[in-house]
Amino acid sequence: MANAAKRVLITSNGDEISVNVALHLAKRGCRLVLMGDEKGLRSVRERIVGSLNSAAAVEVVGLDMEEEREVAFEEAVDKACHVLGGLDAFVHCYTYEGKMQDPLQLPEEEFKKIVRTNFLSAWFLLKTVAVKLRDGRRGGSIVFLTSIIGSERGLYPGAAAYGSCLAGVQQLVRTCAMDMGRHKIRVNAIARGLHLEDEYPKSVGTDRAKTLVKDAAPLHRWLDAKNDVASTIIYLISDGSCYMTGTTIFVDGGQSLVRPRMRSYM
Image (tube, rainbow, N blue to C red; front, side, top):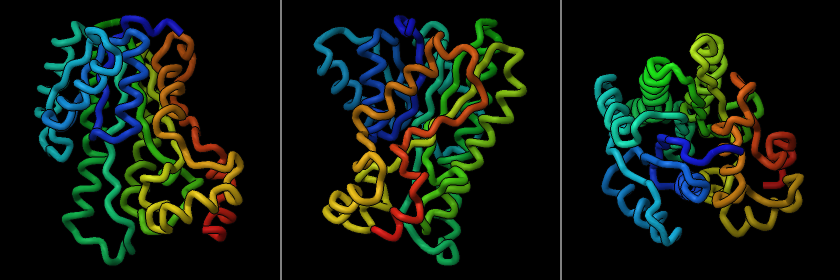
């Protein structure tokens, strides 16, 4: 899929999904900058390089995703582009869900944290990366990793703020695809299914979730954080998806199709 030597900026909070996305990209020869908490991502870089037993081109740039100043994002992206020598693709995996709770009981500061981390940072990064891609005159691919809780197929209660932010990101993908196409910039999203470390499966109990998913979900399992998402991201940043933009792809094993049944089983 012509991903060799792609220069990719990927945000990560160190979670299993984003780390394995980075690992899969590095295996295919992509040059990577991991962006997020610098200390935590240094250890992630070591894991990736160590697992490949080679001098993988993986670097780290620190950025506080709760930052409210646009210039902080500009400086971080500038640094990443300098390290990579340019930019071909941006993959935004960094999210913060918080604990499931009644929206009427959600504290103001927690709400603001959810919005800053999940929507404000997405806006600043989209804008900053798109300027770089536009000015480079080569275009590129922007991918946002979201969840089915941000779509019309949302699955569970207790995530009003988080789900609304992800819905905003999915709408951002659609509207910005219209504006950025003339610069050869493609903008897409993935609405992933839930895995066992997400708040909803944990809320019903891990053992119970493992057992009941066989009766509730079409593929009889939760999302595999190590493998199920990476291939779609690889496709979206590749030249093979050059005519795809403004789209949210569901990688959820059919979880969203059986929402009422899943909730009743759980």
